Image (cartoon, rainbow, N blue to C red; front, top):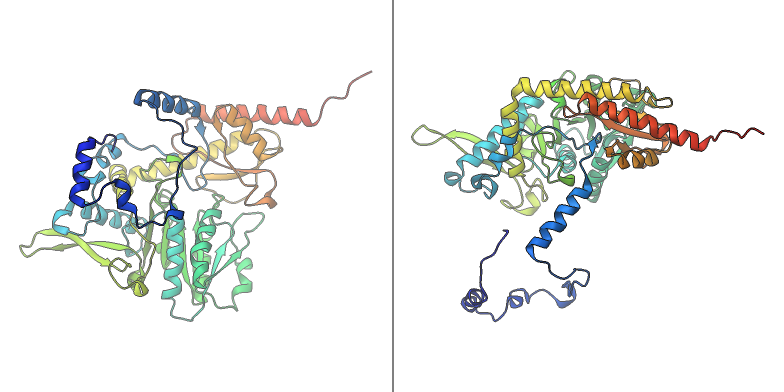
Length: 465
């Protein structure tokens, strides 16, 4: 709320009705040692005009750099109508639709979102979203361990080529529930998961195999072979997918002979701005046989007593509605506002529009990779097909190169050194449909200059006497 119009007299009147003398009395149940106390680091108050000037100056300091970073959050075009509609009061301030008779619009949006996600993943059921892609994976792992009836294994195989933050979040959540995540190495030449790497686990029980498509490096996995192998071992398959990529790639429900059992991922590419890392929304889909293990809530379509179509919450297996010990999840929620944006975004694009976006991203990434690799010493790390992004090796320290590019107003990529030091100086680059040819050319030109400058600095010309 930008402006609270209560006068001191009105505040005093409200406190009198409540029966307390001061606002602080409303919080007297909080122990004194838990209170923040005086915030000494907060500067003195400023007039509204000065605050506006300060924030505008800080926004200008950020600049408007060209973004070539992907790594799980993508700078896509968002049609203006998406947030024009989402920001309407009916959606922007709506709460959880417990009262179906007063929430038909919200419930229909959730239902349409679920329908779109099942169409994209070729699976039977979708919930009404989760916090983000990383927590959606954690929920999928918990779900797979509960649902796998072929044994009591509490081990899940996770490729090292899966997003590092996804692995960290999943480990933080499921590790406290006596579930072991076993990392499987990627092929050093292709950057993908191979059957040879999985072979040692064939004799050991495990509940599920996680398959990213594409993986963190943008590399496409051999999903059919991996799915059939895992299911032959009696394990479930969890696909971690990019919703834009699904416009071109085989959906999880069609992987192998029987299809993946569960699919999850990040919905941020669908109408959500980067927004400094959030809020985003996760999606989670599964086969009908696993529906009772699906966390969160599901919106359904039905008919009322007069035969008119209506929408309602049909499955809510969460701790707010049943005993905590019997809930499928104690952390899940739905991101209704972000799901509304995703639904409107997908409705605007349609199947053809989403396919065109995916094709443009793929073409731009290939163009970007070819342009950057024209600089001596810059080369692709992996030799397999990629989507959306590609890992490149540099002839100079990645952090230094990215810092120099940032000084030229270019966000040049994601430094892979922290998570994958074995790759050496390497970056992950991405070009969505927003990057024009002149943007790619500008990046390639500046990268060549940065590399040349650093190479000359390391190898000074010998003086002649």
